[in-house]
Amino acid sequence: MARTYREVAIEDMLRTVEEAMSRAIDWWGELPPSMNEAVEQFRTQLGAAIDSVEFVRRALDREVPETEYGEGPP
Image (tube, rainbow, N blue to C red; front, top):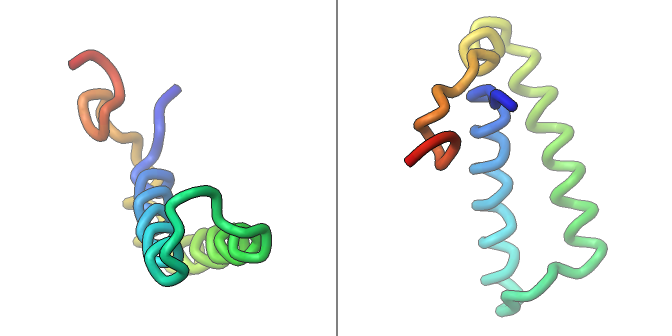
């Protein structure tokens, strides 16, 4: 399934937030439920922020070539 740059951007930003949260509480397992809820809320707000800027949304809605970000053949 083709992914968009928007999806990749959101996933990368969420990964950064999750890593920062893990470091802040010095824990590398699953985040506590309240932190997972905060990450999901951030995901929703981030998507809405991207969608609110039309030219950014159009650019990020393009499909990522299969060879980028570990998708497709090596």
